[in-house]
Image 1 (cartoon, rainbow, N blue to C red):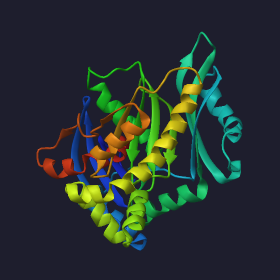
Image 2 (image 1 turned 90 degrees about the vertical axis):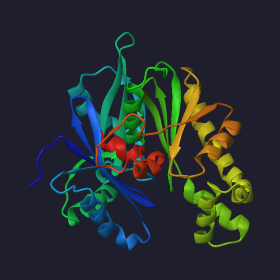
Image 3 (image 1 turned 180 degrees about the horizontal axis):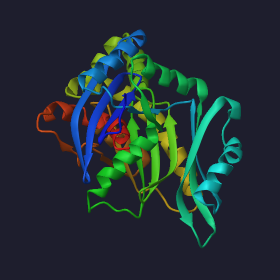
Image 4 (image 1 turned 135 degrees about the vertical axis):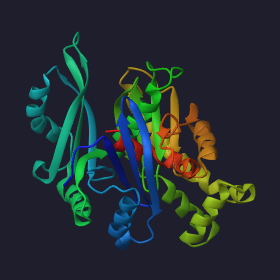
Length: 337
C-alpha cells in the first residue's frame, strides 16, 4: 500500500548511473534524508540495480518521481491566445500535433501555462510529448521491482526545478535576466534558457560525457574503458589533463556550436540575450570544461551546485553526498515535486 507522505523520492535512471534521493518536506524546509548512487555496468542489471538503490534508501511504500529525456521526448514552448486552465487542457490535444513529429496515437502528452500576458491577450505554455512505448517501458521497470510511480517529469524541467529552488533561497542572483543552465550528463547535455525563473527553451543535446570518452579513445588509440579511466584521472592529474585537452576541446567546440544555435534562436525572437550560463554535471573535468566553453561562447559561466541550499539529515554522510553534488540536479529536482 503506497500512502501519501511528506517524504518524496526522486529516481534518476541515467545511462551511466542510477541515482535516488529521499527528501522530507516540512514547513518550507527540504531535508535530504538519504541518497544512493551506483554505476551501471550492464544494461541487463538495471532492474536489480534500481531495486538495490531504492532498498538502500528505504524507499518502500513511497511512490517514485521519475523523469525522461532524449529523442523520445519533445518539449515545446509556445505562445497561444489567452485561455483558462481548463480551456487550455481541452485544446492541448489539437495544439500539440502541430509541434511534435509523432502520431497522436503513439504519444502521451501534457502541458501547463507558464506565464500570462493580459495586455497582449496571450500566454506562454509548455507542451511535452513522450512516445508511449518508451514511457510504458520505464513504468513497467518500476512495477516489476514492486514500486509505484507517483509522477513522470522531464530531465530538463527537473533541472529547472532544482535551480529555481536554490535561486529562491538566495538574494544575490538576478531574477529579471535571461540565463541558461547546462547539465552535462553521460549521453545528453540538458539545456534550459530561463527568463527570470520561467523556462522558455529546453533542449537535450547529444554531446556529453560519452562523446568525450569516445574522442579520447580515438585520439589516444585506446579502448573506451581505458579512455574513461584517463578522463577521470585528468580531473585530478595535470599531466593526464594535458594529454586529453585536444580531445576535450574538439568535443566542446561541437557542444558550443549547438549551444550557440540555441542561443541565437532564442535571441532572434528579439526579447533578450543570454547573459550567463550556469553549469553542472557529472564530469570531474567540470572546471576546465567551464573555462573552455566560456572561451568558445564569449559569455560568463559559473558552476551551479545543486546541493547548495538543501538541509541534511543528522545521520547522513554529508561528505559522501557532496562528492556527487554536481551530478544531482535532476534527481533533486524530481524529489522537490
